[in-house]
Length: 259
Image (cartoon, rainbow, N blue to C red; front, side):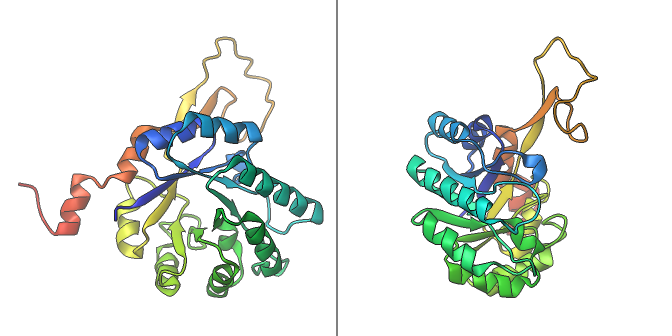
């Protein structure tokens, strides 16, 4: 089986590009600079309408910041899960921790039960939990299908040692999916050194606004990220290069050389 690519999609357009590039799945998010929050109903429906075969998983995260949620935020998460089931998406993505930094097993079970029969991914809340191997077992016991992780490092490439150990300890009971900093130039190394089969990447490129009149002095959003006349979207060509091993990768795996 070839590598499975999940695209972190920030829009319906990115979902279209992900499908065209051959990705198996998208994680549809809003507010990527905040680490991803739940997209609108309209964005989800547009993504479904504009694609035909790609699996759509929706992040269930009411805000940026930590993963310790209030009762009101938990209720919002449950409502969003219910909506995703009504819309017939293929999966949902969430995570939750206690104030001590452990997996909130009671809440996780509640969310997983609410999500059934959808596929469930435990997101990068895993990367800020206290004890990764104990967390692994709790997440498996709760019934999650996969864990998205950078190996508790700033990037998945830096987290290769922990990711490899997680794959080994999971022993097929749950999918360990490297994400954060996964790019076309390093995915082969991560695949070889971790034995992971699924990978999470954004495959985005910078898009310039079509606006002709521009007031550069007023910012309606966070001016520390992109200009308001720029945005990032997934690009199908980058997706393709992540999905399909290049000739050099194949030669390296086969121990061959150029002829």
